[in-house]
Amino acid sequence: MNRYALFLLGVSSIGLRYASCGNILLASEVLSPSHQIWNYALAEGLMAKGHNVTMLGPFADRGNSSDKYHPLLLEGYLDLLLQNEDLDLKSFSDLQPIPFMRALINYSLKVCNHSYHTRGFKTLLSYPRDFRFDLIIIEVTQNACLYPLIQRFGYPPSIAATAFLLPPYAAANFGNQLYTSYLPAYFSDYGGDMGFLQRLANHVFTYADATVRWDYEMQTIEKMARRVFGEDMDSMARLMRHMTVMLCNLDPVVTHPQPLPPNIVPVGGLHVKRAKKLPGNLLAIMENSKNGVILFSLGTNIQSANLGRKTLRALLDAFSKLKLTVLWKFETELNVTLPKNVIVRKWLPQNDILGHRNTKLFISHCGALGTYEAVYHGVPMVGMPFFADQKNNRQQFGR
Ligand SMILES: *[C@@H]1O[C@H](CO)[C@@H](O)[C@H](O)[C@H]1NC(C)=O
Ligand SMILES: *[C@@H]1O[C@H](CO)[C@@H](O)[C@H](O)[C@H]1NC(C)=O
Ligand SMILES: *[C@@H]1O[C@H](CO)[C@@H](O)[C@H](O)[C@H]1NC(C)=O
Ligand SMILES: *[C@@H]1O[C@H](CO)[C@@H](O)[C@H](O)[C@H]1NC(C)=O
Ligand SMILES: *[C@@H]1O[C@H](CO)[C@@H](O)[C@H](O)[C@H]1NC(C)=O
View 1 (tube, rainbow, N blue to C red):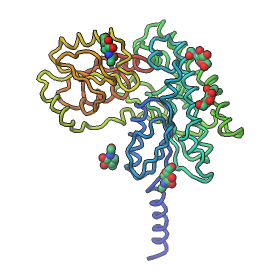
View 2 (view 1 turned 30 degrees about the vertical axis):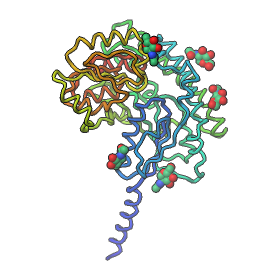
View 3 (view 1 turned 120 degrees about the vertical axis):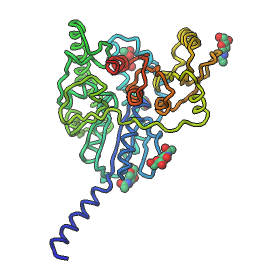
View 4 (view 1 turned 180 degrees about the horizontal axis):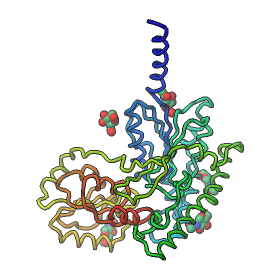
């Protein structure tokens, strides 16, 4: 073998070594199981390519026990929610934009403070000083809480991700304009076809949201973080600029079209999978329903039990008049007699049911994940949105 070939062999074996296995940290502190589903789908993709994934998050334990998956749980979030009535997301649904923003910022500060005090977080901080990640992915949906991990682990390549479509404050931080004349604020229900006054309000609310998050929330979290990471911590603004790319949960076919700079990459619906075969008894229900099935689910954040007895009654009355079977995901014991065609389960394999040919309709809270799944499987939807982006999702997916 001549020297040139030897040199090439050397280079390629170094290349293989570095290309074969990355050590990746995926960190999120969004208290929403659906964000875990999206983030985990991302982790699964990385593990399938051979990478080692350490996942930090409040639901990190909901994952596959592959030897490449290393969950670090931000534990105790349930107690946090129970102890703080003002963190009840359902109560957010009745708020006007300004109180909504205030409640959301309170929420975000409390969750961040909680995260810093968890065992999972402290475990990550106690990794040896010379421990290296090849890549850090930080979910930027909520706040800047976890940005200092970039500095703690020696500034490896870092990227941002968000399962929350594309929050405007995050987009602005990555150099995007806020297109307030035609992109409705995520917490509004204006739809894409706004009148003059709606555009004006949309402009004010979108900028107020982005400014409050940038000026007040980020600085408050920065102070909180300095107590944890030390006084030599970089500013959040500087750490943010270290993230070069943002993956966001948009798809130009189904969400409001919007211009994106090349560093914001839309990977909308990356969690959607082909339907798997349903387990025996569910399959029997699906196959034996002559007129088809309606799937009814309010997702993972809103519990059906919070709907109140009056709404429950009204829904059941309406369902009892239908010829279709209604499959309802309801988390708590339902203390009423059910109509014959209504079947209640604490948990349902939503994607697999949506993928069954006998599913005729999806009644949903319009969370982004379920909405993408229904679009993928071509199932018509009736929306029952509550808070955050849900009203906006109903508008944009319903264009
Ligand atoms: C994978 O991640 C775990 C947990 O962070 C770490 O202990 C382990 O050394 C990593 N493995 C590789 C091959 O990088
Ligand atoms: C975990 O992942 C492996 C490989 O990707 C797969 O074969 C297995 O079915 C998964 N297990 C669970 C419980 O999801
Ligand atoms: C925000 O939190 C503070 C202190 O915990 C509380 O006094 C205030 O009422 C909260 N505001 C909202 C809008 O929840
Ligand atoms: C932060 O969390 C700790 C531990 O859970 C708690 O003792 C403390 O009061 C919290 N601080 C704030 C400002 O919420
Ligand atoms: C069920 O409802 C009845 C009548 O509304 C009530 O008296 C009873 O206590 C309820 N039972 C449970 C377990 O909630």
